[in-house]
Length: 435
Image (tube, rainbow, N blue to C red; front, side, top):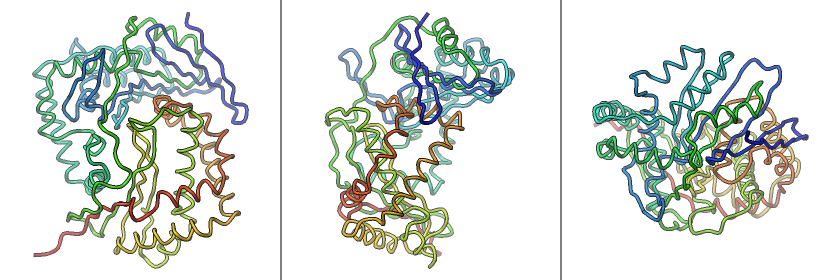
């Protein structure tokens, strides 16, 4: 039986069991004695940006959209059944998603948990594709791509990424294009499943009233026994920290102009030395806290522009670290996107010169700690975060030990370095003008 290591996080009242099977599968279990609900996520370190990879010394190129295509087809079983329907019949609420750097299959239930877990592990590890079903799926995903092309939110997001990144595959849609998915064959799917869906490249995370050793035993019983090499994704040459281009506009049927402002951040990108987990966590926490201090709902920047109608309640911001990149994204709706950019740069310059008010900084830091503590009640959020953060090189629960130590000066320095005119680009979608 695979031994499971117990780690207690006394400051947050959580206990995490972790272990690794002989086939390389990483397992996380968060026991919740007396709870009636269960949640399980089975994730692979394979997403839309991982189109070129090296395995056993061989470099392989694949079309855009394969990871997402695989996610769609994994529910088809060799006997003609559909795993999603099967899970629903046994009381599970199941689904899946593909991001830039991972694909996750998940379910929640209140009964028949072990039966549902077996089904999850079985269908994700059982590839079955035919040329006929691949062709049918190309039509279905083609419609999804068309819907995305008609979505202002999706269009402006990829407009911004295409401004920031010159060649990194993050600039291309995870779902691919109609042209790229037309290149996908059953062999493409089998090859990528064989490489990326090996247990050594995957993580299983479970939360509920379960025994950790029992979870490991079920995974050991169902999954392949061999331990394969972990593929290395190739994102190309390192990108400069300044945008490839500065501005892009398009017209779409929107009621008010929409905008995204963004910039590239230093990260564990290809070509940079690997960092320890504490450093990675700290970088991400500083970025998130700095943006909240600069542009959060209680910031002087937002309250001033919201009061005069320049910003609306849909304004948002994030620091996104994925697929070897770090990206600042700030945006929403505004009748005057150019003024938003001007005011943002002015606010960043003022902060760089005078710093944040100490009481304001302390309040925001406490709010972020409180938000993360509340997030511990969210089974699905915690499990997905544990998997994604493990792929990035650290444990989610460790963030709550580091967050209280973030200093005001670190956030001020982050803004001075990253929120500058030379490092930011802006994408805008304006309402269609009448002829």
